[in-house]
Image (cartoon, rainbow, N blue to C red; front, side, top):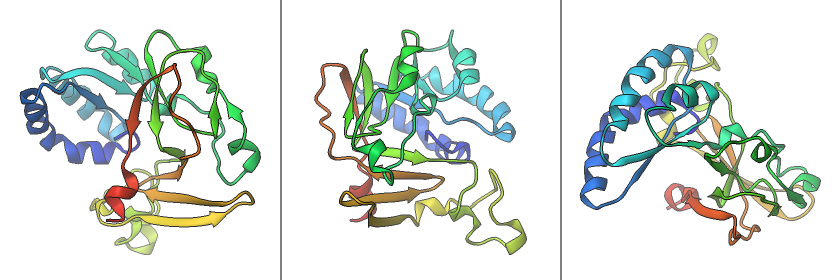
Length: 219
């Protein structure tokens, strides 16, 4: 989970058995961490080092500076997609149709950087991991789906308790923003758009992180 600490806590009881299966198959695991809310932070600082000790976990992707510093002596670190704050909006053809270079790449250290396909073409000056074929467009601490079953006065609260409605519902829609029909999804707190225009074969793309969003949600 890159975006929701509640969802990460929900997954945590299943992770050890998943790690055991991965280790039996000889598959290394990248543990991806969200930006933890304040009420989840103490839990995360206690639990995450325990997860990292499992032999299957060979690296951790973090999405904020605080967690990077906390784990710097405990694991190999990747910089997650939330480190890169470049404009990303498929509704604006001038942004999507051009060539972009994620600005954060110029300031990152030696860690592997996970980036999104924010436009049709990327200019890369270092090895990266590319999320494909969906780019996250926006995310936040308020989950629309978490409000479904709440009283009106309790809807749309940041980091609100939920029944993990995101596992049962999502939004999918298409629209033409002036340069052809585009596909957008809302999963949990995050809106994604499909970018299958980009060619992921680039000498600096050393890892593709495939997100089978449509395959899982529309079948």
